[in-house]
Length: 398
Image 1 (cartoon, helix red, strand yellow):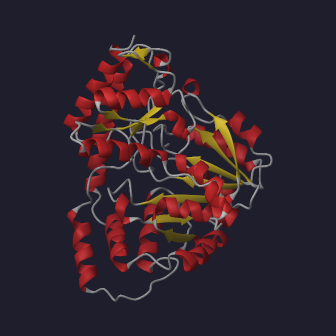
Image 2 (tube, one colour):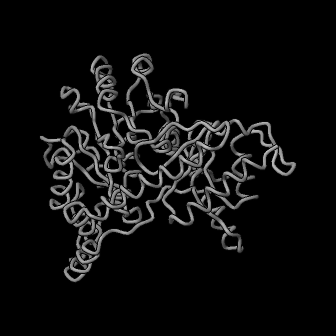
Image 3 (cartoon, helix red, strand yellow):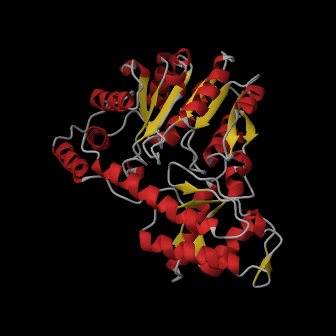
């Protein structure tokens, strides 16, 4: 019998997309569904992006491009890095890919051999475990429950790094929305300095979505001696409302950037000219749309927290970035809704969708089965309606 490759037995479809597809199916059947499931910004970029695309389309060469990325795109990203306080990088330090997910997968292929250890905090973005499984790496998970604000402590990190090949750090966090302060970053950076054999991947794709004046901080600025081991990952998806355009970046040591260029030469060849033009326009053009949306998301964060804080038993650390809230809803376990028993987070989310038409992603998809993720980027009126239904569901538990 013909068989697929052994690695396909380890590959799993996205749990987030499964929930989103279920909600979409119910909506197509006529159900009134409010989706808090998929992590999309739900806004479009400014008109200048579309103008750049139209101009590029008129001038399209139809030719192959650079495996690293067009110079104009590399330069736009380097400027973007400088605005975040990350200076000293050149074109040789950066590379592009088809979105941050593609870049992360290529990094796993470039840095991890089968059996190597990839370490990251829990809750985690679902793809981290999936990629580790596909490339045959061991995922070393560091539990960071609500009681410690879903944040990694220096002591946890110090204990976990011996034997680790790659440390993967997500800030701001998907799924929790938590953001590490300057002091917290500095404390973790001090630990990383003591473990010189560990690569550090910083998944920073929400770095421009930070609230409350907290600001974005990173390991390289905290401890410059880490520069030769830190790889920054970014994309245009979240900040600019362009998830479908699929442009991701890395900045790091030349050897790593060159490895991704080599991978691109075998995987994708290049990012299309039209997409390149859109990304350049987003990065270098007016920033009024992302700035405005950041303020809106901060307001929506407050709206969600006000509802959650009023539900007895629900615990939710205050997120300060991205567009997610991750409440601990374990107080509902063991209770029932209209005679249906809630044994875990999956039961909770299934019953919530069935009874109230509200779609959330169970926390177990992110390694934390006591919680669930709410993505609050839907229109304001829809958000209020969904939150009302969410609170009603809790009130009806017995």
